[in-house]
Structure formats: C-alpha cells, structure tokens
Length: 140
Length: 140
Length: 140
Length: 140
Image (cartoon, rainbow over all chains, first blue to last red; front, side, top):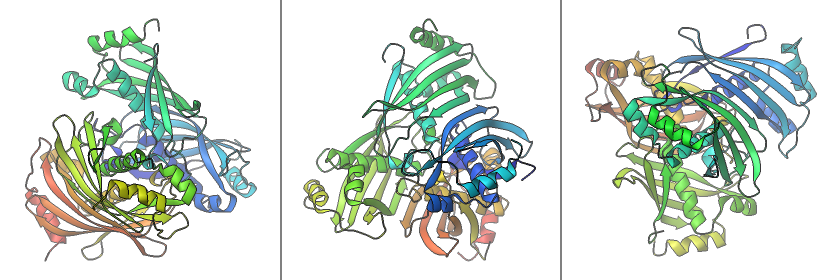
C-alpha cells in the first residue's frame, strides 16, 4: 500500500496470452479482480469469510477499460487499485496495469461494484467492512 | 442479421460460471468477441484469412460494459452486435447480451477496436474489408 | 448421435488460443465438457434441472488426455463423446476432438466422473437419469 | 526447491472457480503450467528468452490428472513439480497440487511435454537447457 493505492504483482503465463502474441483483452479484468481481492485482503477483509458471515458478494455493475499497450508472455505486471467512491452498497475502483520492467501503462479502468446478497438484491456494505474501507479512502 | 444488427447464440457452460453461481464478469467480453467474429464471418470476412493476407489483427482499445442481470449455467444467450463507427483504422461496436428464455438484457457494451499490424502500429482497414463493412453500416 | 457416439461442433475463438498460435492445452478439457453437456442434453438430461431436483453435480475424478495435433484460431472442431462405463455413481467417457476441415484427430481422452452431492459425498446416479444413460450405452 | 522438487504457491481467485463452488477442473492444468514455468525460472530458464533464441516451445503431448479433493475460492495452493524423465526432445513432470492450510492433496498429474519448433516438428532440447535440467534431475 502506497498512500491510498494498493499494488499487486502478477506474472503473465501462457494461459493469459492469445494467438496475437499478447494478453487476451478479457484477462485484464481477471488481473484487476486479483488486485481488488488483494487490496481487500491487505485491509484484513477476506471475501470468503465475508460471504460466509453475511451471505454477500461484490458484483461488478460497470467496467470501463482502456487498453494502451499490450502485455506479453512472461511479463511481470503491477496492478494498482484505489477506491474512488464508497457509499451504501457501492464501491468504485480506479485501477491500472503497468509493466514492471519499464513502468509502462498498459491498461487502466474504472470498475464499479455493488454489494449483493446471495439470494439476490443489493445490500448495504456491512458496517465493520465499511468502516475498514473508509479508513483507507478517507476524504473521498 | 436483422437490419444492421447481427445475432449470435451462445450456451453458458460450467467453464463460464464462477463460485457466485453466475457467469464470471470477464467472460462477457469473450461472448462479445465471439459475436463480433461471427458478425464478420456473416459478411464473408474470416479473421484468420485476413491475418494471413494482410498481417493485421483487430485490437480492442476500449471496452465500456454495464452488467444488468446475471447469466447462469445452462442459459442460452443472444449476443447482438452492431457497428456504430467505422473510419480509417477504427471500428466501434455496440453489443448486447440477452437471455433467450425471457429476452432479458443482461449486459451491454461499447467496444472500440483498432486495426493493427502484427509488427506493431495502427493500419488503415484494408479497402476490400472496409467496403464490405460499409455495406452493412451504411449511413452511420 | 451416431450409434452410441454424440457429436458436437465447436468454433475456435481468440479466447481459446495462446501465444504459441494454437489452442491452449487446458481448453480441450473445456471443449470436452461442452461435448458431454450436449450429449446429456440430447438425451433430455439438463444438468441445471438435475442439480435443482437432486442437488447433484458430476465431478471429474480423472482425466487422461493425449494431444496429437494443434487446433488453431478459427478452426471448426468436432467433439465426439461416448460412454464407456456406467455404474453406481460413476460415468466414464471416451472423447475425441477432430478438425472438421480434414477430419484430423487433434486430441483424445478418457474422462471419469463421479456423481456428487452439493453437500459433499458421492451419490448413486438418480434412477431415472441412470435409465436414460443406460438406454444409450447398452451392452457396455 | 526442496531436493529435486520445486514448490510454487498460488491463490485461488473468483476466475478459477465455477458454479459448483470449487475450482473448475481444467484450471488445475493452468496451475500446473504456472508451476512448471516457475520451476524452469528457478533454474534460470526463461521461456520467452528460449523461444526468442531457439524458436522453440514446449507442447504438452499427454496429461494424466487425478482429482482427489476440491479447491475453493480464496484457498492458498501449493504446486509441486518434479522432473521424472528427460531425454532428447522430451520432458516428463510429476506434479501435485496441495491446499496449504492443511496440506491436503487435491490433485496430482503426470504431464509429458515435447520440445517443438515454432515452424512445426519436434526438436532436441537445446544443449545448454538440457545441461541445466539434468543438473536438477540427476539420477533419474
């Protein structure tokens, strides 16, 4: 964690690439979810425990992603994650994927999530989790 | 093809779902790419032949996707694809994913692509391909 | 269905390929699962309905796969599925993936599954489903 | 590396799970490939550099995998990789996936690979790479 931005490192494997020789475009969304999960873990928030305790999941409601440069097999990537909005049932993240070797920006995205009950329907983020998230996103 | 909108049907398999019991959010981008590929095929444009002839690929430069309702295992989905912009090296698509059973809108997206040479660098869409694409997207 | 062998056709998309220019080796297991799911559907067995009615899933316990020739982007593939053993909680399949264009064998596998309750533990295949499966795999 | 066995740790993310609440069966092959790639990296062998220098890839020719217990979302897994055969163009690996929390064996596999030229055709493993691999698999 650097200020309010969490950083997670990812290696590109064969499974991530496509026939164009680069990382397949949908897989950046996988990388970004790994980044968000590790961000939450760094705050002590484990999504499996939260699911078991509250029966809630975080569903992506919107993803806006721009692809700047391609990642390639064996690249080491850095996923940066920062909360930009937090209210009621909603969390918005700004995320970036950079190539570690030369710090090039490969992709950036705005990802919007809603706290959702397993039985359907949006739910307010549980208070202890909200307090924890607010501590890192103060002033936003 | 219905007017300027192409339709492609997709079955949801186990591979597409996640632990939340629904289709994993990144997989809608896979479904949409299948829809675009079949759209082009319906116009006689085969991407492997185009790659071999011109050495070009279509790289996604931006994807803006909204998730409305979840798809589930064994659902039959309809992917609708329509060209909204076509100029030089660029093609923009508007795409929607619907559940066939009740015609519910599950996700919709704007996907922007650039014609790219395998050696790097943006290239104008080859003239014969452009003519073919224009025939279907007249007036846009 | 041709005798006791079910055939399902699959198109190779970008998502299926890797940086080596061919279909990623794990993805043949996806193709084979699609084939098994369509085999069961052709018998009137819908896995989501069976899950809802009995709370059971079919878990792969063993997969033995040989890769003969690579599939490539845009290839049309044929997945052949045949039941080779059926008893109690267990179903074994012999499956093959062929390239439609020249009928070349790309991969073949033996896949063993066990009927499993969602709460854990192996369960006998429900009698109506078993009767249905036996009708197609008579004499095996 | 512990004796001749390399260990690589993997976190299970949402992308890896399926609607059954467990890791999708094909994804263990992804985990095992990550394990093999990290094994080679630990010996100083980078597959992208080897591809660029020699034009070779390692293609899986056979995978025999047994699934013992399911991995679940957020589990930490350990992938163990060991070379069991090394000759000419061929490498065989024995691999296991364990859950770190309780050291339970989840899956084990025998994976056979062949050194293949990008232009097609099997090639002997380049001598410097072979020497490096032999140093770790002495006596086998």
